[in-house]
Image (cartoon, rainbow, N blue to C red; front, top):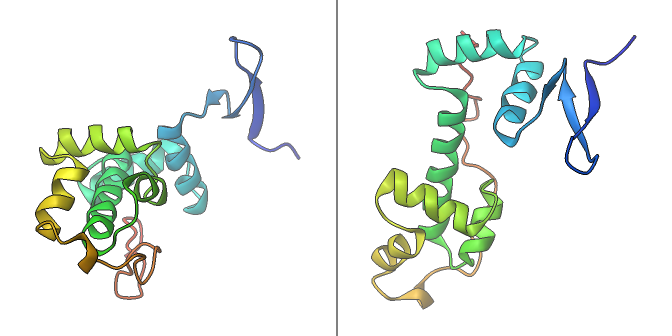
Amino acid sequence: MHSTLDHGIDGAGGAQRPRHRGVYFTKRNFVEVALAAKANMSPALFRKRFTATAGMSVHSYVLKERIERACELIDECNLPLATIAAQCGFSSQSHMTKIFRRELGATPSELRRRSDGGDVAAKQEFPHSLAPPSHGGKARTPWSH
């Protein structure tokens, strides 16, 4: 039995990149493929059902969750912004800054200054948990009824 996951050759330099049934993974669609596999659906069906249920694309939902978690960490702890970016799934601090500016109209640094009123010492060095927030103990999935 062959797996639908194999490795394709990238035309530039011959680097190996995973692919799924002939579709090269990108960071954006890798999440969709992984979630679809967990839901036992094809990526196309998963995308269709997710969008119909959640009212937004998988990518938009994941980005929204990352932004919300980063905002929580910025507000509750004094971790470096680069660490928060990595913990929340952004590729870098500059990527997080770009997304925040586009989606929230403010950079993470601006939000931190607003939230602490200049009193950085009052924040915890580390938050109570770096795990994503719980949703009442029940996973929120658009395909469960």
